[in-house]
Image (cartoon, rainbow, N blue to C red; front, side, top):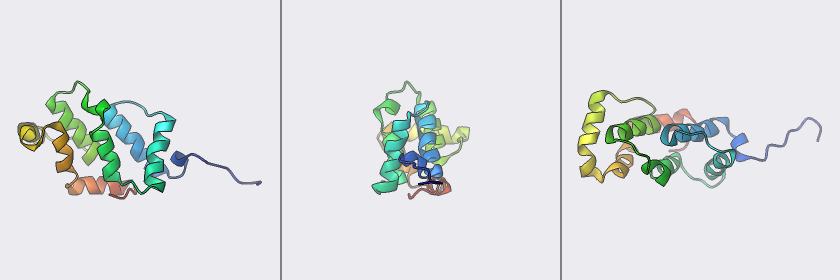
Amino acid sequence: APGTLAMPDPADHNHLLTMFVHRLYRVFLQREPAWEELNIWTNKMLYQGVTGTSVTGGFAYAPEFLNLPLSDEEFVLRMYEGMLGRRPADNEVAIWVSILPNIGGKPGLYGQFILAPEFIAMLQSYGVTP
């Protein structure tokens, strides 16, 4: 119809949500997402009820992320940036690196960070349901 614009891709339906997913690719995987990748994740969140916590976990547990040759310090830094939206202080990195063996290694850090008020606030800043 005149004056209408069809926008069939889910990534076009919610700008903040698309920015959230794009940010996860940049921070966790250090790469730009393909358009189809943005559409897959935004579709899951918009139309399938997948939460921001689950989507973030999809990146934190992704083989592409876990197989990166990151030191423990780099891993903790990436998790802070990806999940809490900030760079950690040096002492925060040291504390988490020292307890990684006690929380199940690198994947265990996700389980700790989803409990942080900063994580919920980061999700809410994008209008994302925790």
